[in-house]
Amino acid sequence: MAREIGKQLDRLESLAYKVRTDQYLLDYLREWAETKCDLFRDDDPHMTDGEKIQDRLFLKDNFKKYMDILGQTSLDMIKFEADLMDVRQNIADQCFPEGGVDHE
Image (cartoon, rainbow, N blue to C red; front, side, top):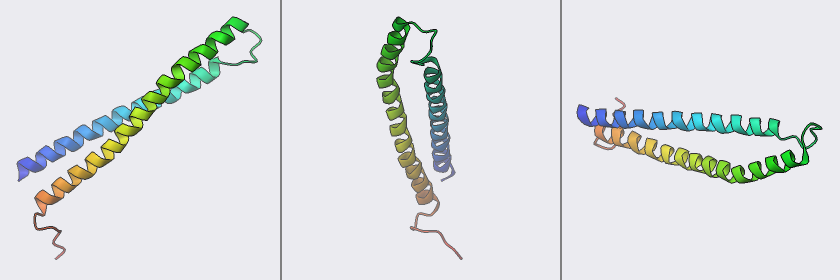
């Protein structure tokens, strides 16, 4: 039984690492969006019309990528929640095979 519990705990650790990776990705995306917002100022008197057009095209092209990555991250988080609950149930089933915790 200890071996099976150890496997489930290893799985939990792996899931926690995935969440940490997803969090880093979200932080990166947030910083990226802030940087792009700072770079693109339509009213900047120092920007030429060509630079403004180039920035608009850059943002348009990359916005779809940004949304795809954000969507995948969201799906990963949903899967994580389901996996975590599965691990929890597996540990509970192994520790308390009779269907419950003895509260006495």
